[in-house]
Length: 337
Length: 261
Image (tube, rainbow over all chains, first blue to last red; front, side):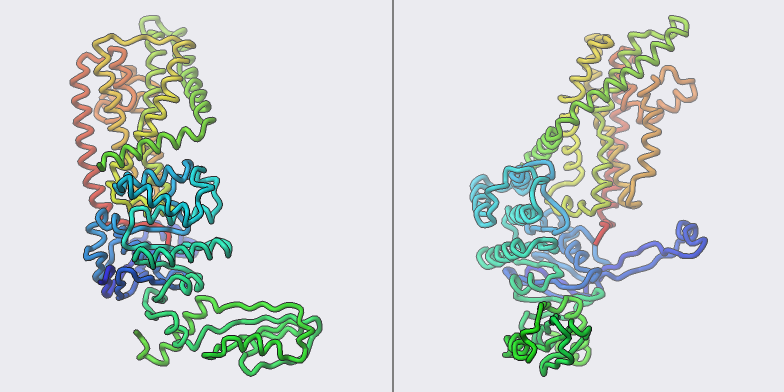
């Protein structure tokens, strides 16, 4: 059953036109010219209950705008939007009971008060029964390992602790959809991992639909079954992770190898040389299906392997993936799923 | 049951303030300083003017009461909205199944409750020892309490009005500046309206700001002949503001612009 349905949704922002030049400032103040920017430009998709969807895109792709429209705090310029069969901006308060929202860069907790105080307040706002409240709080304290800090004021928590509390808070009223706007931003590797594991578990056990926006591809790989990639307000890709990898020919890796002394030219059959600074060389290893460990084997098989001082391996960034998805999709227009 | 949620907000807002204990002391000191300055000015004025012009004990009482009333006003509600509009935190507030205006009101009520208990009452006690204040006549006590309540309501509505206008301009700085100036003059905090010349007094009487300082203090001192009539007019102001505010809120919610992202 589709819990979110969006059809040809458009959101335009109208802003005053800014002028430059010596009188630009005055002109900007007096002018009545406006610039329209389309943050969301004709996007359609639907999400079923219990699904977990990653909503991916570079900065300014209209991700947060989409979440704001879905939660009913922004009114779309055109198109249809339905959450749980209702139009969010007309039924803001009803929709609010069905959704939980976490903003990675904002806090819904009361800064000066202990974490439990925010939980208690949430209990009253969402009218949660005592027994439900107690059992859920107990459960989340255990699952998210919050025992050591639930009684501390929020301002004394680390970012990782705060994020765990934010997520628990958003889930307290047992929502049907959980929106997460960059939930792992600024967290260290372990904290990221814990949060991802928890979200995956909650999604599978409670059947809450998850829609998360992120910059971090790992978030998507570990939490989501499905990816929607947006760029410049348009949906570029909609499908599962394997599908994306197949579409764009796999996720290439960029490898920088540093040698003690310049080994001269080194070529790999499965990689392109991007930059050669003598002792430091950067390659892009092309991904091939079924050859996941060929990268290390290639590197270990070069004759100067004992001269290697340092190696760093990076995934492609979201921007590069989107670029690649774009190029591939333009070559081959049938691909949209 | 929803009432429970708003009362919970009220309570949390109250306890939020308690977490900064030094602020309690600083505010009390601040109040006493303001009262002291006003009392000193009136005393020096009294010394250089004919004795029938200024009743010094009356003026001391007036200063203490207006300063205290100022602490109970809810005009600061716009600050809360302003900072939330700037940071975008308003999203989180709007995503809750509550009525936003009521939420704001109860949040302010918690603040006022805190101010009353930890700021106004101690300040008045200290002022009583330092300067001495007149006690009200029994018949003025009820209208005085009503006027305090009215001051809270009207101040909330004015602050909220400013906050709503911020939905259009996305900043309250200029408005807040203007409001500050209007309140300083027309609420009669520093100079009671009975000292205004006829033109300015007339103007002050036509504005709602007098309910935020002058009216409660004047009722307390028994300076107003028909307090209930004045209070009724105040209710009229509250109703008018309520209407305007509801209209604006209805429009604001239709064209929500949330900054950032």
